[in-house]
Length: 500
Image (cartoon, rainbow, N blue to C red; front, side, top):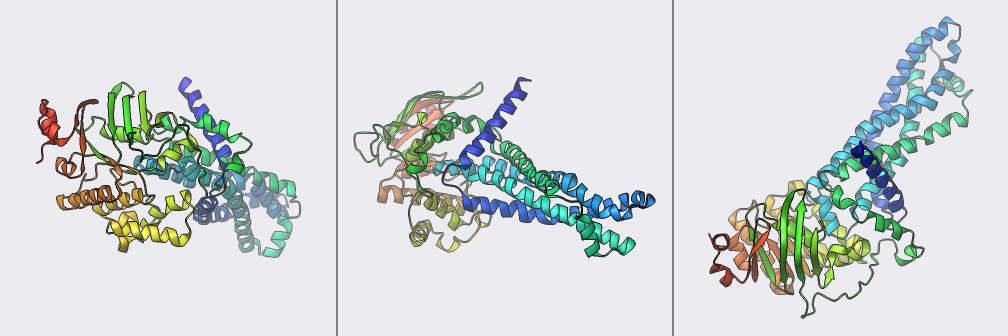
């Protein structure tokens, strides 16, 4: 029972967040229109065909009874009132719930499972507003329109049935159908489908967006963000399409020599009863590459996600250029993330966008660049990773190595200062792995980007890394240069760092 009420509370909060975020710029008009087209156009054939079939069936079922009492002329009136008041809104809602609701849940769940939602957050884009709000708003807008189509499709079906059974003309059928119909019979029932649409969109998006353990971090800052929405000068501080991010107290550039680019101070993290990281402390100097090695399941990827606040520590501090990112929310967190890039192990490309649009998305959302400037930046970065001729391909058309390079290109397109890389050579052959290592090494040398790289590949780590950390069962076994780790007293350290 407690879990049931907790679920109702979470779902209600999810709905309130949708309403609050809808009125907060940017207004995602392009996304909303795209989702309206998805919900409406894809559902239109099903709704129209169902309405037509129901109209035919209703005429056949009611005709015999009404004719028996000499009320055959009332068939169009009965049908129109029945459709406009009850059947149209109800059946349209059920059809959309089955088709669109399941689709929304499946798409968001897949994006959560394939780390695409994490990738959106890592790009300093509000994933809730970008993915959830447009889908729910689209349901609210599209469902009344689909209901109207359902109503009139039913009347057309009834008219066809009456024409073949009693040769009643379409004109006479329509005249009789609308004789007793008033606006009060049409408008309120149609508008109530906006509530149906909100419920369908909210429930389906909730289950998809909070799939797995995503809900643990989804709600972490929601209460604080709600309070910020009530600040009177909010709309004046930010214009549509512009990231107006606040200055953080005590903030310094990552380029300052006297402060570490990344510093973890006694960080611990658990999932349930499983301790993943225990009292971890390490730091990375500006312009250096730190390679984190360890056996599978020792907390390496978790460490990266903690550094960009996709996960939050149970204890300790995580400082990016001196700012404790573990305590930041909303615009302050976005401000820090804009200096960072994340190459996911699976690349986490947005599967509904072309390679070009994958790179252009953060530039459109987070910068004031013109369209020609965006095109130039995308072409330049794709050229650096050898994918200039593939920019119009969809992610499904790319090989594993191409996806890795594309993910790296997306991470580099914002001219970042800190790059987090999760298993750059995972699942790749030796030649392709070497190409990825060359790209990382070139970027570190040319731009002096600070890097934190999680890898199992000791050969690649030796080529790119300046310092090395070895984790085992959540503990830091060793931290230092390659020479120090080659002669480390711990056998596990020497084996993990040994070049095969």
